[in-house]
Length: 216
Image 1: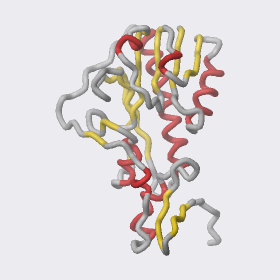
Image 2: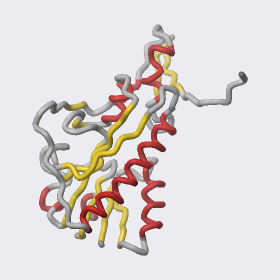
Image 3: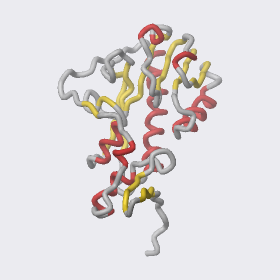
């Protein structure tokens, strides 16, 4: 099959996983990693993984299937950065949904859902490993379903909820509140691209959290 993957940012950490997956599958499929919607041509499947552009219907129609990976248990948690919001809210189980791309955001029929666990001590990079492993497994699952002629199932119309787009302000800490109370907010922040930060004494300071070996 001819399969295109669109991931908007070259700096996104999922790229390493996508490129490794493409190398492993290159004998089975024609795989291309793209960055922008104007690079889309045609194919059997278009996967949208951390794609920040809206792909219009005329572009989606160039493909047999156009599939989005979204890290929430849809229809709950539509919108942006759902697994980050969920962990900040205290979630320890994250669902990733593979769905059809539609004009209405995150409303498409569901191909498959898979869960992964998030331990209370895990940091951004550790969470990413579990997330990306789950996403890669969903790519394979959707391909298998398409090859078998299977179809996705419509989402429920009940319990629909939305998360807003995260901004730098969502990574700001309160220096007068304990680390323990803000630990979930700190640990989900990308230390390179979107670090946690706080303001004090007229200056702004970033926080970079690193897990080290215990002396105990």
